[in-house]
Length: 129
Image (cartoon, rainbow, N blue to C red; front, side, top):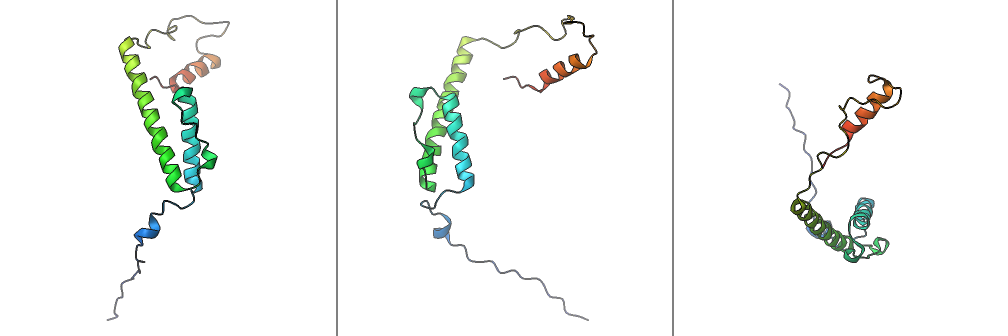
């Protein structure tokens, strides 16, 4: 009977010091994350609450981490404040605009026409928050 051999794979030893180097230059993935956070910061935060940090000057993983922590905390605080403000006002988004089933047909288009179907399918894709 022939001997059977198991395939062995050598696993290199894990060097924890080399793996967690905060002074390593940032990767393209981190650069993209910085760009997305910077965009969110400038779109959603009032000017007085922004960090005014130029992300092009962030070169190391430590600098990127500090920026990400600051902006994430600011965005969370801003989102919670907006949520409380909306809840306190008691306004709901229901009742805005005409109902799509109101029976009114605009122009000379029949209810089953292509234009009518396209418009109603576009409404279905929008999320309501």
